[in-house]
Image (tube, rainbow over all chains, first blue to last red; front, side, top):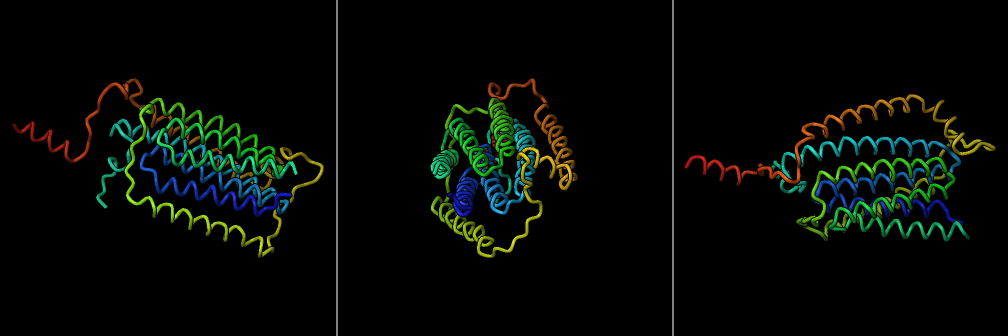
Length: 100
Length: 192
């Protein structure tokens, strides 16, 4: 029998993979992929805790996270296309205008 | 026993696929492995008894979101490998590892505390999709409507942002770079 700790540890592991991606990536499209990984990891944790306590709220929050992720992708990809039209690249080192 | 085997197959394949997503240089490989990892994640939802969530994950994430990425990639040049400059790769992996430790501690805190109250219990004798529907349209009705409005706004924003100057080709026409050096060069040439 698989306990809740297995799911939570896996979820933490996947979230850290996404976090490494967010810190490491310089291409904006790849950065979006890393955020998707993080959102999915949190969904697993919500579903596992909901299952453990016999509570449907966990699944509800996962549904709303999926809705937020879908709208984030729609708006984000529109912005990426505008940025690509303006700079002809998606590299953050070239796009960034603030010298910090 | 079968749950055990299924969990470890799904866990190992998601970790490997998401690692490919995060570490790969090719956009196409990253996107394909992300889609594969999301299919594997829906397996966890089926294991956890959240059937409807698993189906939504397959339809929305693997179907809609990845199709959106695939269509958006037609705008970008994805055949070349992505060149990225890394300033401090060791720090990144150190922070990622620390993050993993912190999350394991945070997630195991409620298991140790053991004093969470069930807000909306799963009713027996009702399928998962039906139970989700009952809770979604009673307790979570307002968030549901707000999410619907948010999706509408996102759709309008996506159409307006991506739809402008749709007839101009992005990959064949070379746009001028808008950084400081090339701007200075253009100014010098004009002054001559």
